[in-house]
Image (cartoon, rainbow, N blue to C red; front, side, top):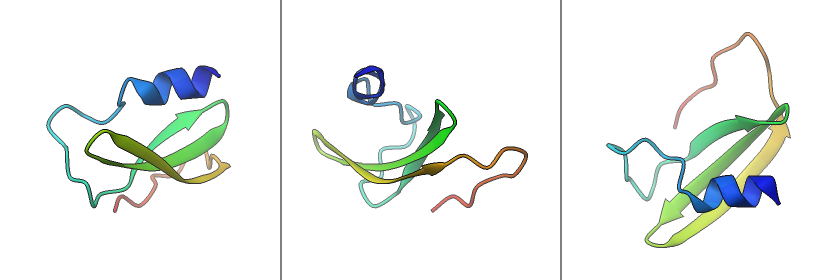
Length: 58
């Protein structure tokens, strides 16, 4: 439920609103990847976070 609340706030950077871009955030040791098109946020992938590495940004 906490993750849903975070995602409902649209955690994208304010200057980035590209509907084709896949964004990511780390939550509870997991990497959550998502896209936002209009008012719809879609979670694309959830996997274990890899600490100490920079993730490829799409």
